[in-house]
Length: 436
Image (cartoon, rainbow, N blue to C red; front, side, top):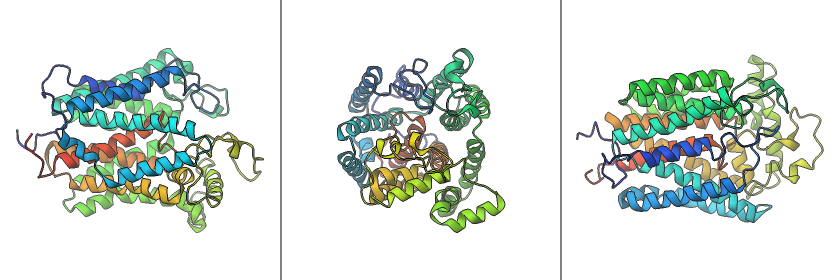
């Protein structure tokens, strides 16, 4: 098999083994769908209750055990070296410190264990496929199943799949959310499914790829997120254009500039007020649906604990915030907010500025370096383009939503697939890799 047709090989299992695609497909479907796709109450804040119930605890525990067994029995030692990265070890140290500094260390530890199981699930789903056919079938079945459940929720369980007129956000009535807890989450996931669908369509399954793409696009339109409708075409077009540029540093710039630009226009506009004032000259009253107030509030409290932050899951949604009197100048009632609607800011609030710097470096610059190491041409480049598209899309979305290390957030799972996928693809396509 020529290098242009080779998919990065991680598994020791025979490439044509019957049902070799099943474990990866199962992991993708289960993490996206969750263990209670239709049976979980959705609160007024758009957060599924019962996240710590026995079904979820057993489910995540079984997923973790399954992933360890699959990796131990099917992934080569050479492939496992892809995880041997100093920054990832430093991230684990940051997470450990954040647990110790949390208001409830034991609760934070349990939450972090489940978060790391999601990381393990993403790594396992990527590491198992050995051939192009196995990988494409895994994606088709896994993503197609998750998409199907979302459509079932909309058509047959509308109290779960469609926002109602009650609660704190009646303006979302009629917007689709599928099996997810909010239309914004559904929009981002469906945007990623569009990317998977296009990849599948160009990689040997044109019919099923087209089905996934079309039904995902329809879902995005009915979920009604203007942000996703804006950044999805930007991510797709930027990566498409970057692939045709032979000078790799320029390719990186084409991908990074929109991400940096949106970061500057959102959180940067709060940190540096002249930026916001300039933007408001062109868009009067710009506040990103009140998010700027949240960011100002978060930054003010970050100044009180800049080194260690407040600990994992120990700021938003806690008595530290809910017991305050609502500042009259803020558009949103911060006492009921579950996160700061900005992943970069919440990383600093949870882990402190030094810890956030390590996490941001690991989730931004290192994936770009991995992408540049993937050789041009053939299947490896196509896989790299898929993952960098997902990475760019979720990195831009991180400026308006908060999902880092949120175990039940499928957008976080999407970013993990991109970051780990880029690392594995770069590692397994190095010239020094053994024959496959």
